[in-house]
Amino acid sequence: MSLYRNSAWFLKGLTEFTKGAYLSASKNFVEKDLETSMAGRSFMITGANSGIGKATAMAIAKKGGTIHMVCRNKDKAEEARAEIVKESGNKEIYVHILDLTETKKVWEFAESFKKKYKTLNVLINNAGCMMTKREVNGEGLEKSFASNSLAVYILIKSLIPLLEKSPDPRVITVSSGGMLVQKLRTGNLQSQRGRYDGTMVYAQNKRQQVVMTEQFAKAHPNIHFSVMHPGWVDTPTIANAMPDFHSSMKERLRTPEQGADTVVWLAVSEAAVKNLSGRFFQDRQMVSAHLPLAWTHSSQLEDQKFMSVMEDLAKSFQPH
Ligand SMILES: NC(=O)c1ccc[n+]([C@@H]2O[C@H](COP(=O)([O-])OP(=O)(O)OC[C@H]3O[C@@H](n4cnc5c(N)ncnc54)[C@H](O)[C@@H]3O)[C@@H](O)[C@H]2O)c1
Image (cartoon, rainbow, N blue to C red; front, top):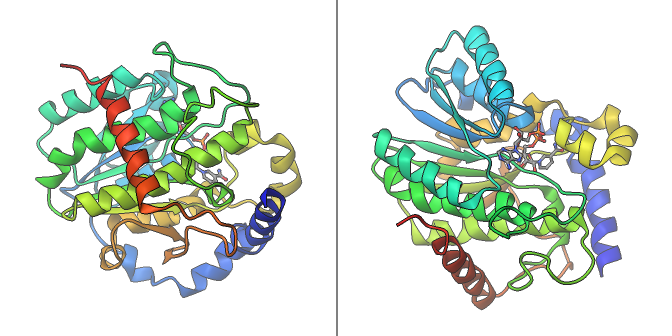
């Protein structure tokens, strides 16, 4: 089955995730969807100093939105901020330093943000990492899970009250088509057992983001939730974590701006929120979050169990 899933995924990728596929899909884009001012709206973007996150921040800054860049490295964040301010002419760009693998700090950051700022219209969970070997954070949590899954859960959970009192609130999570090869797991979330395969752990975390989005959408109908795949994009994450894939596919990879297009569309357009909340998107289209015949659907019971494990784990690190 896993061989089937992997081959079906790669074939799908060659036809749908490349630069050529983006150019072909973009022929059906409605250009005026993005012709909208974001002045007076605020956006939190994790990993906004590089790749898709930076391209998203730049596009929204050009539309006048206030941007909260949540980044791990201060120098890289300030450098990207300066570039965004210079190119967009927008000075409402703020840097917040946070390492998403540090679970308690994620809580502390979100709770203090909520106290300091009166509104947040859009949360964009973009930051992501793929580990080559199993590493744990200072709290004993496996780092891929801590940053790709638990941090996303905590940011959403903590910021819901702020989002709910802001007009037209949205949460967008940048997942990956890689999740198509994984069925949701409710146990071994931190890969304590078995051989550690960083690519599959990443894919599992990205599947978890899809399920979290569906479940948060059900529980919070006042917020529009979406999760998306940017396609195969030429960014440092891909170059560092998958060097062979990167060098063999280099010519066919999307630019960061092309990868960011659907994130921006989900964040700013009126058309995006006409779609149901909690769904998976690719190239401005709501698409299935499962490959045909891949047996990756989880039951309602499994989804609820996963959310309750996340809830308990998140709570155990919540500041009092
Ligand atoms: N590039 C692709 O082909 C591709 C495909 C599918 C999904 N994605 C997803 O797109 C998102 C953006 O990645 P990208 O391709 O632009 O790569 P990138 O390397 O350019 O950006 C990743 C960003 O995440 C940040 N980040 C990583 N770990 C962090 C941590 N612990 N704390 C704070 N920030 C952290 C990095 O500093 C960087 O700013 C990721 O979620 C990635 O999984 C990318």
